[in-house]
Every structure is written in C-alpha cells, then in structure tokens.
Length: 213
Ligand code: SAM
Image (cartoon, rainbow, N blue to C red; front, side):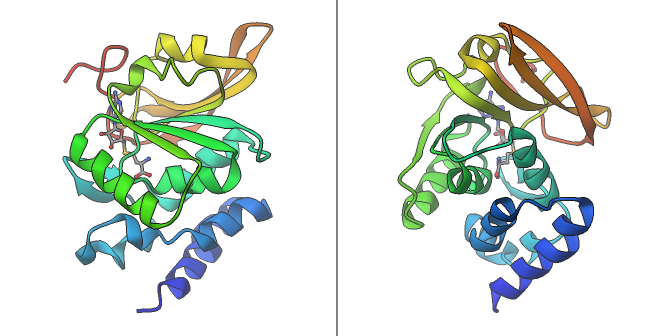
C-alpha cells in the first residue's frame, strides 16, 4: 500500500476544503506518516475522516481536528508547546514539525511507551514525553508559548493559566459528551480571553483538574 496517496487524499479532501490553507501546516500533514502511529490492522483506516481507537479506550483524533487545533495555535517555529494527551503521538509529531520544542504528557503508560518508540524511530529530537497526570502541567519545563489539550476538560485546568507565557495561546475542548466546544484562550495583560471555535467530541481529560475517573 502506498500510504502517501492516502495522505495526499486526506489533505486534499478533508483539510483544504474545510479551510486549512497554511502551506507549512499542510506540508506537515503530507509529511507525517499517520499510519505509523497505529497498530498494523488500522493503518489504512487511520487516513479516514474520523477518529480511530488506539487502545486503553482512547483514540487518535480525526485528521481535520488535529489540523484545526494546530491552526488555532498559530505556530511560527519558535514556540515551546505543551501537549496534554500524547495518545498515539501523531499530534506531537505534527507540532514538532511546526514548533521549536514539544513537551507531551500521557496518563496511560502503554500509550506513552508506544508513542515514545515511534517518535524515536521517526527521528524526532525536539519532543519530550512523560507519563503523568497532565492536568498538573509540567512545572519543570514551564513556561510555555502554547498549550494544547487533546481531551475534553470540564474547565481550563488551573495550572495551565500559570504555565502559559504572556501572549500565549491554549486550545482545549471544554464540556461533556456531545456538547463540547473547542475553545481558544489567549493570555493578554495576565488575563485569559476565551473564544469558542466549534463543537467537537473528545474523550475526557481525567485527572486532578479534569474529570474524575
Ligand atoms: N493527541 C493524541 C494523538 O495524536 O493521538 C490523541 C489524544 S486522545 C483523543 C486523548 C488522550 O488524552 C488519551 O490518550 C488520554 O489517555 C489522554 N489523557 C486523558 N486525560 C489525561 C491526563 N490527565 N493527562 C495526560 N493524558 C490524558
């Protein structure tokens, strides 16, 4: 199977028609081999226009949602980004193509290990991973220029507000079940301004500042 054909189709049929136009962003989606982040039997399915299970009841997000959240972060290549919810590692790889440094946290050890293995295999040197409750952020690595939370939170976890730099941005799905809203926060004059982006459906963010298990 020539996966580059599936990748091209994914970009041209799912991303560009929905308004993802930035060349560097599209190049990252052409380049990163999405099928490498999932088990053998899902390699073709993973280029579809939907999320796909990756084990532990979790999913690799739909390509368009990965693109939209990345677009919201407005990356120039100079940023240090915190990702909560490494999952398969795919979003981390996309971020690593577009930012200076990525720190990513996953709560399931099995997923964290598998993501680490593939990201090393693909040669990423600007990604740091840890297995922990990401709702606490990553104090030793803070502050961050951007934060992306790839699981749905009841509200913005408090440590994020402290670990975000002035002028920084956070993309996070807020809410429960089918009534979640992808929300973009920006820190201005030490205050967070929020803008709703669109409705979305994510697995829950579980942790001290997220939902209970
Ligand atoms: N970004 C991922 C990717 O590219 O495959 C998809 C993320 S999946 C939709 C959400 C992930 O968030 C799951 O892997 C889940 O285990 C993780 N998660 C949920 N709560 C978490 C927490 N408190 N800390 C770290 N990870 C968490």
